[in-house]
Every structure is written in C-alpha cells, then in structure tokens.
Length: 87
Image 1 (cartoon, rainbow, N blue to C red):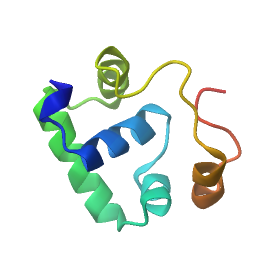
Image 2 (image 1 turned 180 degrees about the vertical axis):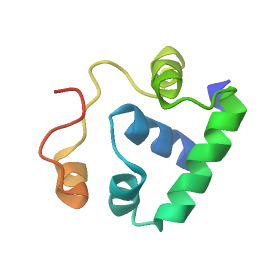
Image 3 (image 1 turned 120 degrees about the horizontal axis):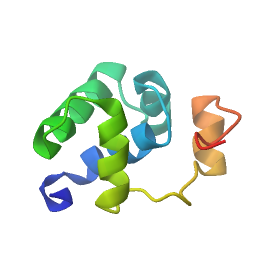
Image 4 (image 1 turned 90 degrees about the vertical axis):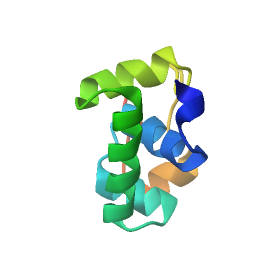
C-alpha cells in the first residue's frame, strides 16, 4: 500500500505521524497549507482511512515512519516545534 503513495505524500504522512499539524508540515516542506492538506487527504484516501490516529498506525506498519523516527533539527527549526512529536 505504501508504494501507492507519492514521495510527497509519504513526507506528509511521516510528518503527520510525528504529530505535525498541516501548518507545521507546510512550513517544513515550504508548501502552502492547502497543498499539504491535499497531499494528506489523497494519502489517507489511498490508505483507506479518514482518521489521523489510524494514519499514524499505518505509517508505522507500512514503514513510512517508525517509533524511533524524530523530526530533524532543521524540521524542528522550520516548524517552530520544540519537541519531535513523540515526547
């Protein structure tokens, strides 16, 4: 199923699985929030869910993200976050 996602959709799913909002993801990826929202919605449709919690579980199951994954220092700086989403 993860192979059905585009590289950008995988990035958006990874960031969402780390707890980033659409606006934080947009800052990190240098995209408009509406563009991030569209990528997230398409990814969720491809993965067959409309729930953010299930999206995180699927991201881990499909190895788009892992329990050890964290925001990089650059991603934290761009988003304005102080933690990586798992803390």
